[in-house]
Length: 288
Image 1 (cartoon, one colour):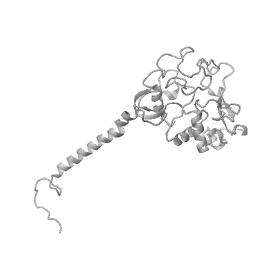
Image 2 (spheres, one colour; image 1 turned 30 degrees about the vertical axis):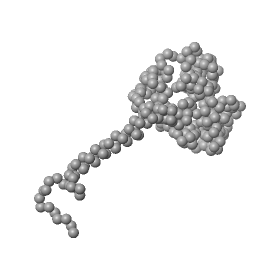
Image 3 (cartoon, rainbow, N blue to C red; image 1 turned 45 degrees about the horizontal axis):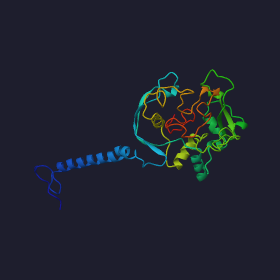
Image 4 (cartoon, rainbow, N blue to C red; image 1 turned 90 degrees about the vertical axis):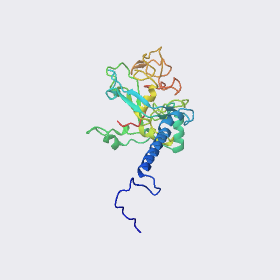
């Protein structure tokens, strides 16, 4: 039998327990707020406390989130590095070193993966990414291969024209970085090279990881230094002030190798944040 409709107000509305409904609403809101605070601690603040300990994934280090100045306003900076701007990133795990040849080999052996440089060139894909009217490359340029750095025979005037030192080399890939005559024997602890963005993504997915964003990578590379011209501070590198494996001499004509390496170096050859600065290109998941 339906309840009778009251003919006049009898005070605050109540539930079946007889408690005022407004009191119940206040209590529910208080519980919701408490749940939010707990959730924020567990999923937001707590990871910073707990992940900073030595309980993380092997070979990775916890980078607490923070804010930093990304990019540069320096006259020597490239256009896509400007302007300098403030960026905030959340905390994240990151590998302590670049992916090594040994690590990438384990991935290839487990999955039988073929890198981009080991596959026949897709001429239609090349033309789709080229300016309209670009001629079809000749057949000898369509064999599997990659670009290889070749020092110039003399100093150059325009160091932003990279076509002067990059050469398409058939047979170049991660196993043969400089072409078929080269190899990576004895370089298991060197960073893997001649891998594309797609190759890096495939490796990261196999390893249960992801590529860092450009902001995350720069934030981690800077360590705790913000707004400095170098990842180690203000002092410029030289043949005697060596902080990382970089080009020493006149680029791209002559590299003195004063740091002990003309090409790549072992991933732990230098202090953290510095090992392959400017020598090995980094893959990030940011879109350009």
